[in-house]
Image (cartoon, rainbow, N blue to C red; front, top):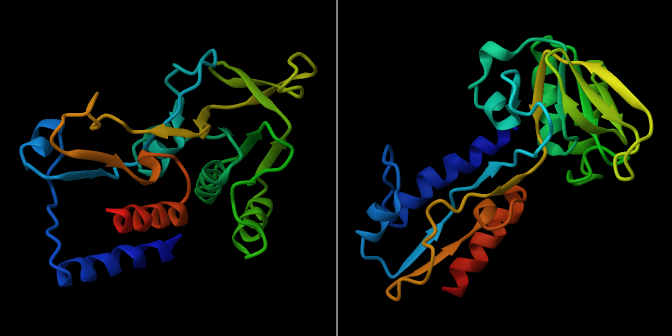
Length: 222
């Protein structure tokens, strides 16, 4: 996704031209934001990984896909690895781990992996081909039931329960099971002075295209 860097480069040049003040290296808090005395606060702080109540999810070799991609789990990157979740994030994380030489399996509860990636424009097709070339095993129609120190236990009847159980070797388990909006900066109620709104993943987790469109629509409405 190297092309995405061009978007940051574009905004880095365009915002100063438009007179937008950009403050880097400063963490926002509710108090620091409120002290600005603004009329409108737009929160675009993204989302945080969902951590489902799966037995064993608290074990030390279990991490989020975001932590892996951010380079925060380098000491845990050992194969074989199992990525739980076969959406865009899970498949791209599997691609990243396989590129590092790890044996990787992907668990996807639905019958088709990568359903949230737009089909027909080459992105989904190229990603699946890379995974096949790197011999990444995609277990579609299997659900993660529990995590043990060296294996994960999966079921082939993910919705009904029961069915065949399979033990898949896993020294690393990566959770890519969705995100939830980060509402940590949103006031609990209306402060009566300013309008607080959220946009992008902070409002509804999705993809970059959806976030940019939603931000444009919000700005136009304001």
